[in-house]
Image (cartoon, rainbow, N blue to C red; front, side):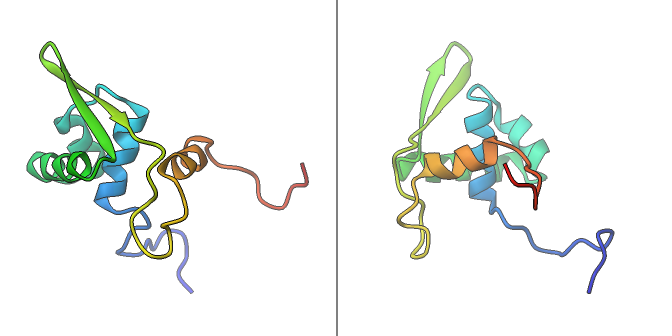
Length: 105
């Protein structure tokens, strides 16, 4: 079994999910800021934003020289296992932060 210092080469959240989380947390975030947070190119971020916009997961509006993003939290997640979970449900879980495991509330 690997220890905590030996992180796996894969991630739980895809780049599409990472971009969605980033714009949810900061609606006026730039593609450059997202690319720096996720460690992907700005071009990849712009492609993902276009994918999410086309699929209806986000709405992009221009305010002056910056974009503002709104996440459609009512849409179901993409994929056969997740289709019954709304985007907003996932974002609420991720927004709440870490919780203590094994502690009765």
